[in-house]
Image (cartoon, rainbow, N blue to C red; front, top):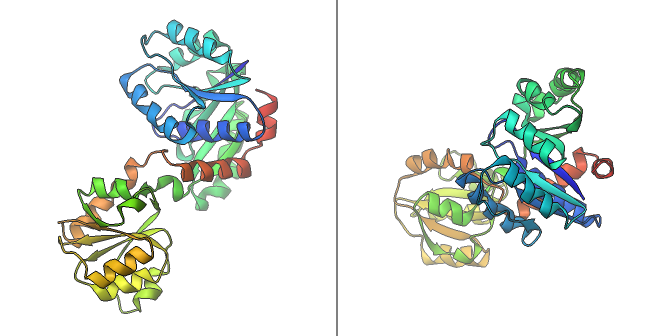
Length: 319
């Protein structure tokens, strides 16, 4: 039995996506592994649903009856007896000292996951785990900062005694929401295509502006939602000639029957909202802040990112 404790010193650094994806990769390699979440708050309990949605039965739920470090540690050690490796996602509610105490209690190795932009500031947190730290994963690396990462950030971390296991780039799929989630967030109504509500939307486009042909404009983005007034069949038909997931039709207006028919043929959902186009776009601007790791396609994408950017075989050898 071995325990890998995946920790971060900030919220939304990517611990859940890393744990679930690494566990799935190790299982693909024939490693007997499972994932659990250290429960120290009611919020931690709510996070469990995301693991169940992507991993199903390969997730061990702790009782959450006690938030005491020793009690939780005993539960973790008991769960670890059933597998070769147990990946434990750390709670964000613990202090640095409580994290290190729990790691000593359960005899775990540690991986620190941090947002790229916060990597240097998190050095004191990472070094606090001493020899128990395997290394750090830098998440959400933007393309234009790659040179900075290799010339400044990674050398700074390594000089502090923190090995860098890999850099994970930003990815649209991981920030996406399902059609159903978008509908609920905008307080919209499905007119057609509710059965495609679990499809992921990676981008948004507004229809009806500009002088270029609509199909040319809409072909610039795939897996998109198109925001357009319900009384613009010309724009709607142009959009349907490209790769898209749903319409968000504004002004409370339904499309004509022919558009409904073509949308159904293309398996495109139609959502009606009462707000106008500008107000709707303002609401959409904040949606991705609430994106969660809760979809099989996100699991597949993050597994690919880990495989491409982290030595999983090497990591497996130290677990």
